Image 1 (cartoon, rainbow, N blue to C red):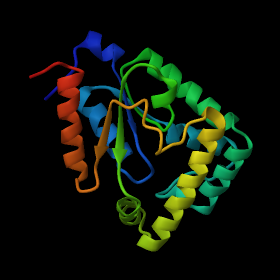
Image 2 (image 1 turned 90 degrees about the horizontal axis):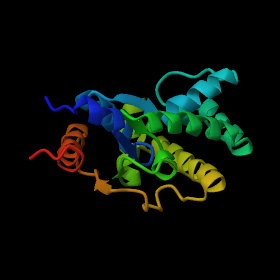
Image 3 (image 1 turned 45 degrees about the vertical axis):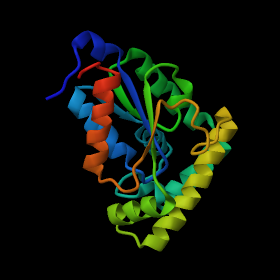
Length: 199
């Protein structure tokens, strides 16, 4: 069982990023468990804010649902939702000892180890369809809409193009042909070598 010393654990920040359906949440949760770090998600933070607005948040594929898309539209009109979620994540990053599943922290937080999981539209749609019980065609349509709205929000708010600007990342990892377990094990090898200095 790999682990991080308590002193180093307190300062460790790992950001896992990638477009919807690439497997970032699964990888981030498993990494947090493996290394004894806390896991936090930008999506979960936004869902909490959506619930406070009266949205019925829950179930698989909520972001791709009609309610999820309505919240996207509200976020586009009121960027304060995303600012609040990102301020919360930034405070957690500054404290350390975390794995962040976030589209924004690679740009907003200066430290940490940042990895981008790269997957094609078709691969992401297939994963989404299997996860949420959708047809591949419906999943692809939902992904394209979500990608477009997400890019628009962050370009307006922070000026970067999600999925096109890779400047903050230490590693870009093509996951198209890999299982979730293979992605996780490969990332652990990198973390061990780069962050922990283990042979």
